[in-house]
Amino acid sequence: MTKNKKASITLPLIVIAFVCLGYVIIKSLTSPSSSKSYTATDIQSIQVDVKNVKVHINTTEGRENKTEVEVVAKGKYDSSHIHIETKNNALVIEQTGSHKLLNVNFNNSLDVFVKVETNGTKNRLDRTAVSSQNGKIAIENLNSRAIVVQSENGEINMKEVSSDELSAHSTSGAIRLDGVNTLKLDTKTENGSNHIVFSDKLEKLIANSTSSSGNINYIFQNDIKLNLKWKGKWDSKLKSDEASTNKIVMESDSGHMSASRK
Image 1 (cartoon, rainbow, N blue to C red):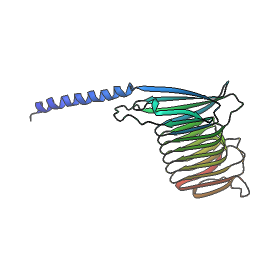
Image 2: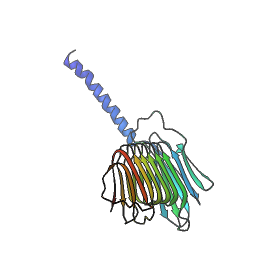
Image 3: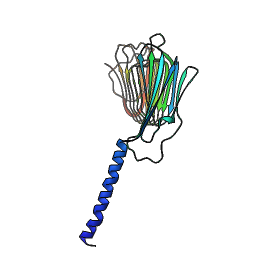
Image 4: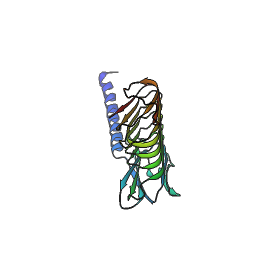
């Protein structure tokens, strides 16, 4: 085959490839989106059970006690896949549908935003439970007696949360807690790290953190006495007080562990 014939065949193939690539890029940038909203009042607990969803929970002060939910879907996802209802003063959010099978979009996302508004009289929830298999979970400014968060492949981030009991488990994602004030803490990861910064208002604590291969770091912002126990690579100059009722237990197979004061 001559060079001219090769060129005449190759050039159209290159053009077709660029056209297809351009179509995919344009399709992704102009991917369809859908959204829906839901409002509830006098909510005492929140239950979220989803698969491929990023979950955002935030509490703000307002004029009334109400909870607003907004679902935003793009690309292969649809907001109708998220079911929202209220049962016995509990807000229940579930993922009932799956994504579109035929999809050429890169811009795919499904987000659930939960905004808890309080007027200062009833500002504490009884229980907040969030489970997302592959989505990131972000919780901020939440006051709930019990907080239970679980994710298989997504990160777990919490900031300025207050509770009696707090549990955060992730298989592959990291766990990062900042400004936490709780009486009982339990965190567990397989391949991710545990990074916990406690509130300067912390007075009592029973904590247990484990990780197969990730690091575990505790940072305290006050002079609370601590009874420290660990199993693995310990890298901390913080002294343990064996008489303290604030018991901290850490265990990591191959990660480093530390406890420090800010």
